Length: 117
Image 1 (cartoon, rainbow, N blue to C red):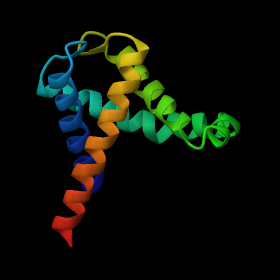
Image 2: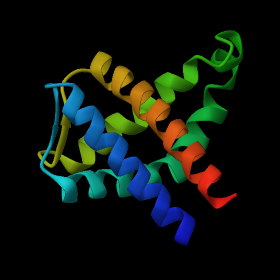
Image 3: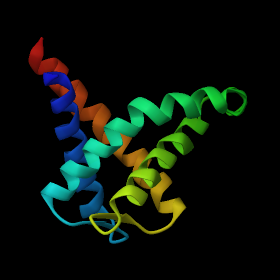
Image 4: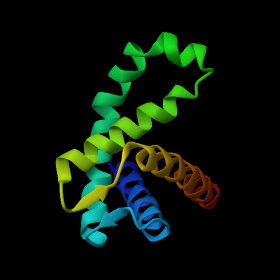
């Protein structure tokens, strides 16, 4: 439970960073970012594995690059659930935001892992 909450906070930080980088990503504040991170974590736990299994052939053919599109789909679904609290303009920006959120999560999670060790 503690790791899941930490993951939500890391996701919220990444979402806030993407919102600060791009004008087409609109976040209503820290609460909106935390809510978006919470919804995104639920979608990543439930919807993402289903999408990975359904798109396995194209993921293999693209050497795993299609996973960025799957990440963008879960981010787009988060946007669809939250409406005005969290908004991304266009699917291209959603793919770019998903890539940047993934990179920020990678860096922050590695820093947290180094602190625990």
